Length: 80
Image (tube, rainbow, N blue to C red; front, side, top):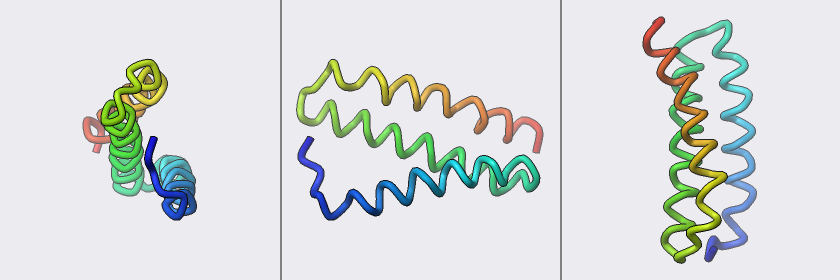
């Protein structure tokens, strides 16, 4: 996809931090909302990266994950 290898550790930490933030958001809502936003942006970036190199077939999984990640974001905002 053209993503430099040196970005991989940062991307892995970002994904793990998003997952941990979503779990922590069960107990502290603002953290969960921010984590959900980060996860949505992470997967939206993955979709853009796939589209940038014209890998249309590869956009399905990150697009679905971005859409599913919207649920905790919207629910967190609605119940804040």
